[in-house]
Image 1: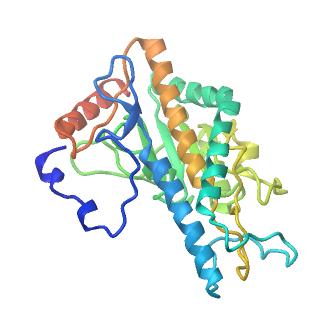
Image 2: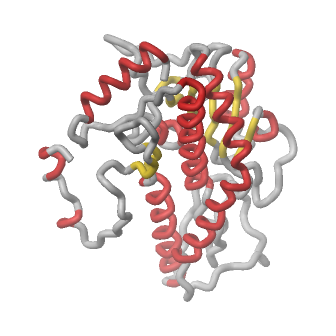
Image 3: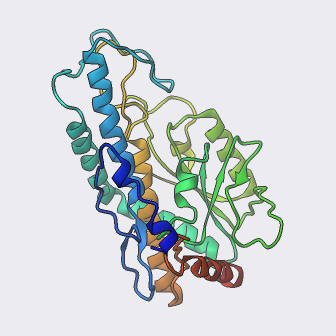
Length: 316
């Protein structure tokens, strides 16, 4: 870590510290031919830890007679729905369920490979890979310029009529972040719910352009595939069968369930796909795709310049 960042320590001032055992690099996979590891794990472990905390915070509030509203459009629970025991900790239960869902990634490895093949085909013929989410702090932000991230992924977000890039490292000078896709491109859509109207409208836009489209996230609401149009029904490949739109836990006195797993699972699938993309590029070209460091690591800014140069010269 560079000296000016090394001094910025949160732990000595925190009342409580949860150790996630992340390295300075953050990434966990050593890629053949690359001096830097790839595949950051902090997003997945951080999201999971966050929901473990929220689960027990909600339980303790409810046990104290407090109620609260839940974000989202899940319908109110049936009064007869099974509810959690407020005397039993929920954080560990969330962890167990999240890890069980994570293990199902193995069941979708073929589809992960197909999505990667779509992306590699686009990139090697002069197109781009876009990672879309309706809101910036989701799949779009997770993919872009992360320490250990894949340089060729471009984040895009927004309502369907105002889609914009999170950044564009290929551009020089004043940035134009308008989204300008072509029929050569592939987009991977990160979903929080399968039938979000904005996501469906964005899918229609991607299709009109002629892009290849994949999706990650829940295909169900409360264990049921919604009637009518959904993104997972209509993309070329979808992964994320184990997660659901709604939360895991019904808390007494609270109208909707809390603590979803969709964000955690989208994160896991996204990095599995990115690593498969890197492997396929190495197999097909004999060269290693650009992998980011960042400014907190010694040599990180120089590496950022190298990544930009590689993206301009070869696209990956």
